[in-house]
Image 1 (cartoon, protein in one colour):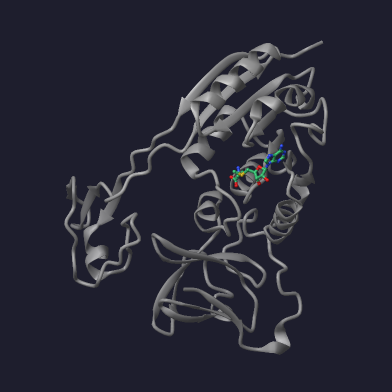
Image 2 (image 1 turned 180 degrees about the vertical axis):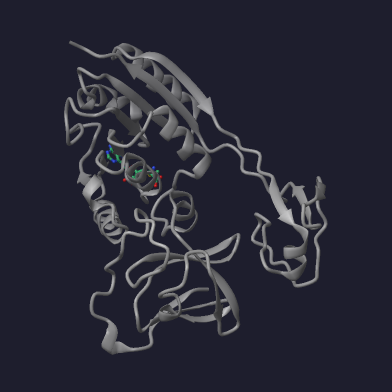
Length: 324
Ligand SMILES: C[S@@+](CC[C@H](N)C(=O)[O-])C[C@H]1O[C@@H](n2cnc3c(N)ncnc32)[C@H](O)[C@@H]1O
């Protein structure tokens, strides 16, 4: 359970104004930064640091001002334990963002960035925005001077992502758009290096994606679909629209956990993916252990977590060659 509350009503001014902690590389946490409050592997909370505010969690209460001036990554004491104050990354954000829809997770997100060939300066169009999991990774990927146009038919979602981008210092590289990409197309034409689709009928948006892609540079189209019938329809639409290199990949990751036995036995970190707590001094049975001694005498063990992720969806990718 997480509770956010004000401990000082006089310092509420400016609530919600965040710093560029997603973008900057400052050493110390400042007021306005977004901090990922790491309790354990399965338990993290994003907060915007604000004097006078506090959060209440399983391990007690933490006053935001205790974070100000601390180094990123510091262990910070709460009233009933401690947390680690982590700098936000796109992966951490995906793990703890406020979910408004189904979201894309890091294994798919990382491959999407690669398939779209996202780099600093790229112009990318995305639909739908959903909870903004992929949108954050794209925005960070196109920094410092690229742009992400993220489209959704639901205005509450574009409004929410607009506020989050502002809070995270990513407004200058993003434009949320309320638009049905299957009917109205994308906000920009002849501009994009990449288009990404995560909508129920992606094949209906393929012709509009062609219009959004840059004619002289060409570009990439990637679409996420949970079932193979959608893949078939989308792949056919891509070929008919003139795309080449139409390919499909399904990512099914196998996760292995790297466990430092001493830290685990001290209860410092719970590295189990199932969110189960590790009581101090108590080990856990492992399924596939194998390990060795560290240089400093500690033991590192590689273990399989008790649950493994399975099918999320298929990624179809294709290339549009430059058109003169
Ligand atoms: C599964 S969510 C996307 C999740 C997102 N990729 C993420 O990682 O958070 C699908 C979104 O597509 C939006 N959507 C559905 N059809 C659409 C369309 N034709 N044009 C624009 N957005 C659409 C929905 O409103 C929904 O928010």
